[in-house]
Image 1 (spheres, one colour):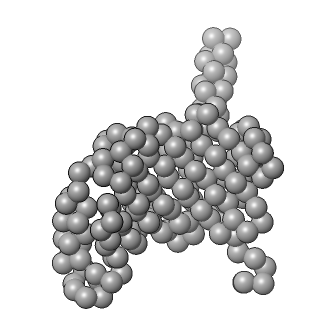
Image 2: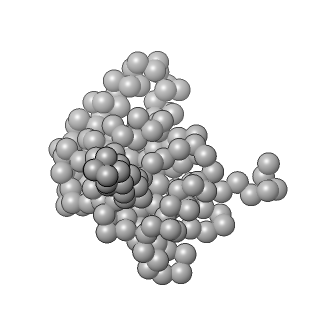
Length: 173
């Protein structure tokens, strides 16, 4: 009996954690949409909210907007240099590539830098650009994976990550 109880508790905890954990994949987003619609609070028409959502080990307040054209998930948390750094690491782990960085009015376009120099030189220039500013400087970092676009913003008080997956319409196949 004890073994069944422990198994039940572990299944209950893992399903609760799974429902409150954002997992990005290259699929169409149907699985994520189903999770959002079944476990998040329906807060407005086509909008769902979660008071506590984990992306990796980081905790966020989340909102999702679901339409026929796209699935958008927005994550919000209090700023910390550690959180900003971890989010960039997690995006890279999920297959995202940095497209563009804008910090306090300065801009770095990764594709342009790669066209103008070698990949190694562009990478070095990007690192120098990112490190030129204090961690709490206002910034927008635009990322892309195979099926997702991401915008990571910070103003030194809040960090918010907007993830958008555009739906492929039948006529686009």
